[in-house]
Image (cartoon, rainbow, N blue to C red):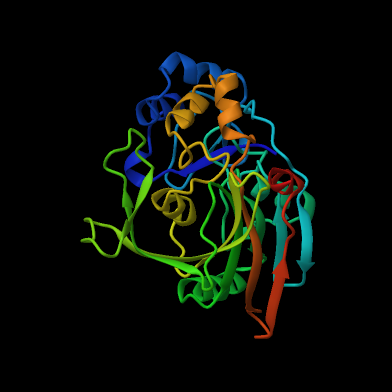
Length: 318
């Protein structure tokens, strides 16, 4: 699958030679580098191979055919649990990104669905982190996507996750409810890291309400790990992982919200040490989207799906 980006020439941009235009607008490469890209036949002008001295006109469509990425390996063995004219329900493995980004393009669920299911625009209604496995809902058209997204936004979708955590999680007769806010972690060196703030305190600036119920299912024989069911009542990014860290039960294998965030920094630089791998226990975070209940966007019929705990996570508890 070819990565590409395109731009439509506006009237105030017309009259420039193509090479001048791309060199001045896209300064992350030098003029000489863009000239080399032109020589490598990486530009199309109105669907025809472009020449560097071509003069741009209003309405021209300029397409840049981007070089292929050397992408990290992923697990592309997803499973289709349900398919109809409007929807696909996927059991996504880990590691597999949902959408293109960073070093990933062809090695994503989005790209695989385009190639293997002929979807021109796969619309992933919910998304999971690259290292999270489980259920992903995919809409085949705009109407289905909008109606499903409205259900998620109005909290009419029942989602249940299974997660293996460090420590002996409390075995209470009713689920442990953690309610509060999710905001940027002011003490972290990692900009995207969030922190869960319990509702007993003041809400930090720009924080969003977050609520999750947790129930212990089992513990490992040595009592060092627990399998926990997590039911999020809000759908915030990193909600379950950040909340469990605040509660004192970090997710096994989690480089960002696990036992030490320095693992994430070393992972980003590809310099994890053997001791780091031992601390993580497994290469992925032990979080799995296990069940999903919602209404079909066309018929209104209630649909429920489940995906079993992957063998790697089952092995932790054994």
